[in-house]
Image (cartoon, rainbow, N blue to C red):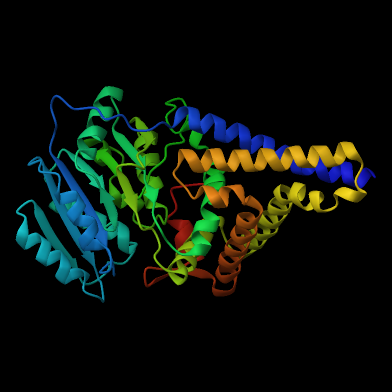
Length: 387
């Protein structure tokens, strides 16, 4: 049964590689310490929001529980068609630390979210800028703890990974597998290594020293970057600054996508990172082959009665490695543990979501994001983040 030996090793090797990556990432990306800063600079919290009426008020009010007067909050309504703008105005009228900005038109050559962030920067007065999505919940004191860590590490940028709360079933199934993909493609174990240009950014919490951002080209250098959050960390690192990444799931959380439709739609934008139509087709085939490779141990277990015992035992060991690796990642990043242990189901669902996104981009020749259409060419032309 030569074929069985070939298949079992094709499944073993990627899981061993993923296990090594996750172990390294868990070792280097730690939980944020609850430190206090002796001297806290002024911080401007910039929250872009588009059609977030169902979540933005509750999220912003968690931020406002922090009584610090060195905090200012800039809420940017990016062409919302729901009540987001009214909610922002209401909150601004109740707290003098809050500024409301309303955007009616998108300038040519800008993505909506990046433009909203830039509008916030223009109004900000802080020495540090915190880019944080409008639906993110932040515990009081977290910003000071992040500043303290930045000062301790002499860092110009601090990104924090949140806990993802709730969401549709399809998203919860995919999350543990998506984190494995994120770790592998962005090499997260190098995120805190100054010897590598592999910084990470997080849309939930991207804290950056203002002068370091300006030195790196500012948000204008990311005006057509779909992965703008990762882009902030990368341009800081590439311009000679120091970037740091930690997790803070006990103090930072987000209801990432609230419906199945929103999740599927949100996943479509990632296809624009993979090039033109031909490159997308090639990536589609590569994703399929990789998914079959990591699924093969679980498929082999179903053939246990006809397999040679050594092959069956290797398949079983590989399947266990896969479950332990995915569960370890889920524990570190506060992802659904039950779906980490059911990793074959998550792999199949993630395969469906990924193939759907790639093929939609192939057919349309572009992607839609937050109501704006972008061609594959324009997305590639403005890309700063390379996978």
